[in-house]
Image (cartoon, rainbow, N blue to C red):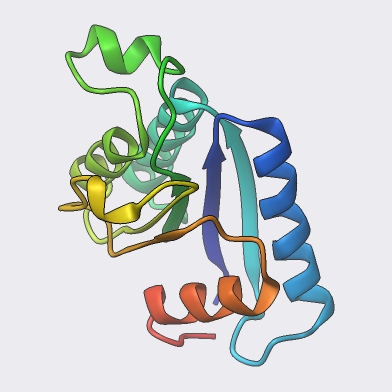
Amino acid sequence: MTKKILFVDDDRNDLKRLSDAFYGMERLRVPGLSHLDVDFAEGVDHAMAIIDLNVSARKLGHKSLDLIITDLDMPGTGSLAIEAGLRDNGNTIAKYACEKLPGIKVIGHTGGDPARFDTGYVSYAVPKIRDPYLLAGLIRSALGGED
């Protein structure tokens, strides 16, 4: 069964590194991680729009997101979040996704200390993800090792 993943970061270079890690993971043909459909969002507003599209898809009986992998530290990237009275960072995305798409898993990563973020809606909070093997392990753990 295909699993849908959304990668979110406010920094294009970091988003590219996540993309490289994901496609590196695919090239390595890591067992247990086939059938992944991925999308990339630059910043909070873009991510919230994709989440909203997935809410609509779920209501219509279509496949929706299973996992979000988001930067936790994205200051100043989300006017929609600010208008809604939410902080504009990965925690905002996690909270928004968990409320709109019950059952979704969220992995948060940051260049700083993950412990300084409120991770109540985040399944895993880790340092910046650059390694395909680390990414594969996190995805497998978050999705329950499903293929």
